[in-house]
Length: 627
Image (cartoon, rainbow, N blue to C red; front, side, top):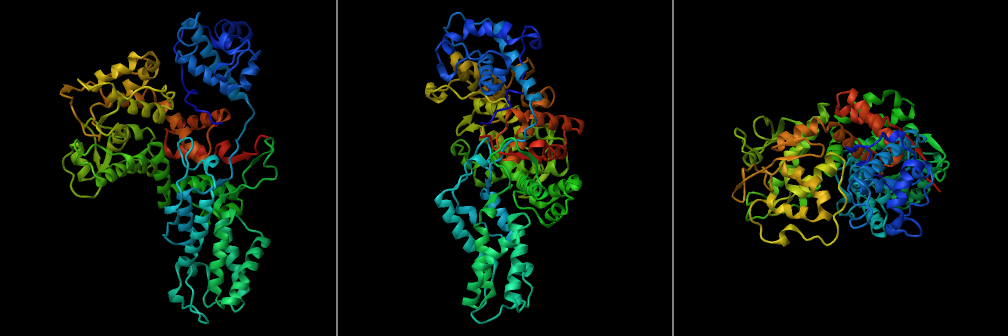
């Protein structure tokens, strides 16, 4: 079960004793007995939680997930519920929350190192297409009609949710046949293939004129091809099994190329191609922890940065035991390779929710200028900024605070920036425009709006979840949408007061709404405005902790100033989740701490983020599964 690190980086202002001096038996247990056991003890188990079984601090550590949940509820003043008498004082509530944070953090820091378990992962659709492209030297994208991949923890490369259905298996079989046909040209029966008609795949793998010993030629081809397809050295018996399958076909058809088509099909439907294997001697023994061998590391690197298989250089370094020695150089090479566009598209596209742009449908009566071209321009602006931060190895804080962007004429008109013409995107300064960073890009502003108006709730939630790493809890059931609560009169800010009049809603909306209102100067497709429903826009607010702002630029300065640590940690957690293909657990806190410390020493550069991840314990090692 994954653990949101929203909880690990937060702090609470309270007037209470030093939590390090408190003890469970003397200070915590009496408060639980007085205020919690009525519902969660003495035979009561409301919400499936019982607390009277906790006798010592070690019990709390073993049930860390329960206590993380309790701490959230305590801080939101949602436990004990309203009406329950007697309720703990604010001081008692803060003491419980602070002690829980302190003892769990101590536990996370001192628990034995654990790289975690990564499920054997199926290639997702993007990885499959990219792998076919680089392996078969073809632009054919067969996964376009595959079933959509499920997502977990915000990403679609999570091993635990990448299931294999009968329909998908049928798609793999059909795709393998199509790929083989496109990659290998076959001569007419009884003829030989003219080299000028050979495909790029054949020119790479087949030596024309063909060796008279077709069996030897087939074995040589399969040794090379299967090594790349399986992303590791292949054993002789693996090659032999495929040869036994295709040799009769060569004899029957009289065509070497026909037999090699069948060989390719067999390899492309093998689990060793479709899944990312890290072979273990003890996969079910959680006590067995080991460092990845270098070919496994090469695959993790390639699918993290390129969403594709390792190239020849990575495999060669790995097979000679030289990859770790050259890791810094190789990571720099990989990030500068055009294939690193996959990291931009797939990581930023999901982290920043750019993929949701395809579903955005602004009201055409209110926003007639919005069309498919402008939608793509919005997406491209944000991916180009992310790319510039990556390729120029800039500080990741520039994602929030960049005073430049990339726009064409359509976006320039939307933003009111003069001097930009044509379809070509160009780098422009944002100084004096009231914009900076991705939060003021039209892409993000559009995906966090409703079709007919802005949504401070969506925008505030977006900041909490994707920028600060402190997602709010799900909304309570049966709360009507704002539009159903009556005709909008006055500004949206005035209407949003209704959310905070409900005590159940108030605790979350008091955190979300001010952050969302910071962007009220931007309408539902990102245009700057000064009025809302005929009234002056009020974009002022105050964050938890007291930092005040009057507009989005000032709010941005708070994020990259006072809240920079929260942002860097959130980005590190998101990127590590994407790199590992699993949700983060409590034992990953140590790795995240190491990555953020390393980034701070390195100026929070993008390259330092990537190096911190690829040298971290969970990326470089693995263990078996708990049984």
